[in-house]
Image 1 (tube, rainbow, N blue to C red):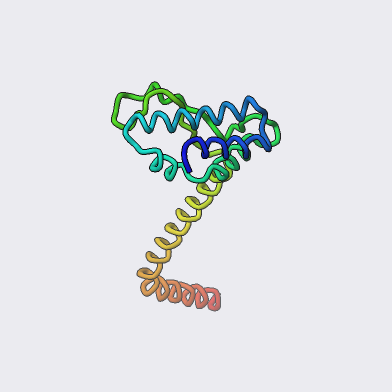
Image 2: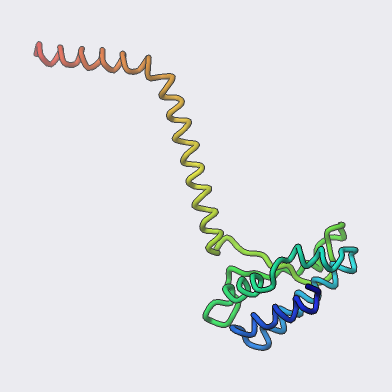
Length: 153
């Protein structure tokens, strides 16, 4: 698949759910992205392999537009023309990234919380495993003394 086939398939899939202006905007973005990457020395095939299937890209874009017809707040556009002149900068254009308010962001947050709780429980268990041989006899002796005091009173 070449660049033109990629863009044509992307346009087809996006046209099923988005307005013509939104379709054009997204297709122009990927056209410019591919052109910029090629001008930086990558081959067309490398770029298209890196991007993946156009129908998956279209599905992601459509999901981010949601039912309102506007991009959701979970999908932000960053102008990378203001990024420094490092080797990774491809010049003008935009970079799309997902915020932590998205479903994936929530999933990552939950997984991090579960991992932290797991580490805390593991630490508490480790400490108790070493203290149990000392604490259990002390607690038993304390309970016996308390029982005997209450019995004598």
